[in-house]
Structures are given as C-alpha cells and as structure tokens.
Image: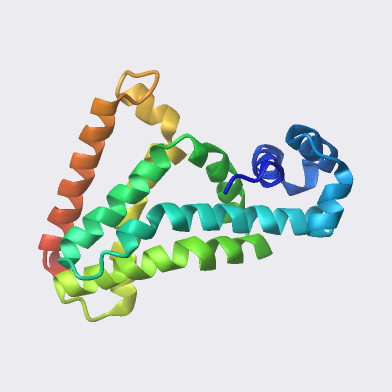
Length: 200
C-alpha cells in the first residue's frame, strides 16, 4: 500500500541520513502537516523506524512468491529467489530503499533490526535451506555463507548500478538486458549448487 509520508521519509533519510534529514522537508514532500509525523509516529525517530518497517514489508511482499515455492526442487527454488531479488534490485522503487538500507548496513541502528527481521533474514534462511537441500551441506554456517554469496551477486545491479550501466554501455537497462542478467544469474546459481561443498 502506498504511504506518501513514509515514502518521503525513505527518500529524505536515504539521501541525507537520519541526523541531517529534515522532518519539515519530509512533511513538505508528502504534502502533509508536520503534526502528522508526531501524531502517527511520535516524532522523527518513530518515523525513521516506521520507514525501515515499510521498506521491509515492501521487500517481503515482492519476494513472497519466490519464498513460497516450498515443494519444488531446491535448485529451482534458489534460482527463483535470486531472480526475484535481482528483479527487485533492478526496479525503480529499490533505488530509494537501497540508499536507506546502505546507511543502515554501514552504521546499524534499531532500524536495521526491522529490515533484517522483516525481509533479509527470512530470505536468507530460505536460501540457506535450498543450499543445504541441494548440496547436502550439513554445516548451517556454511550454507548461510553460500546463500549470502548467491544473493549478493544480485546486489550489484543496484549497489553498483552506475558501473553496470557503464560496463554494458547503456543509459538504462533494456528488457533484453534484464533477460540476459536473469539468465546469467540462473546459470551461476545452478553451477555453484552443482559443485561439491569442498569445491565451492
């Protein structure tokens, strides 16, 4: 569901950081009264936490179809999760989310707990289950590490967007580019999960 105040908060906090972001600017961007921030969220800190929760809910909703494919082959499920994550990373809404999330990655606050518990942890846990089932990996930490590397390859398409576009000699990613990226990710996941734990 769209929430203009939270979307404005995400944009402002992501661009300026918590300390420098202005609640007046957030209210202005959302075309609402500043008192709405206090009424709905108790102030700037509450708004910041709510913005993190809003991002987590949006990411979880986008990834839900891939995470719900429990009865399928674990390699196919892993591919679906990575492809779903990559599609999310290449989508326009993820630009504002990524700026917010990157700040939390560099200097975690209580907001990171909402991002982690609401979206990141469930996706990582399901990916780790896929890894363990597909490879026979018995060490949970090793399965999570493989899961992180599999999902991490999709992050470059948002975190290093400028480099991706420069490398592909593009101003924007065209549908054919997206299809090629998804095919490459699919091949990567299948190749890694086909390897023995020792050779990965």
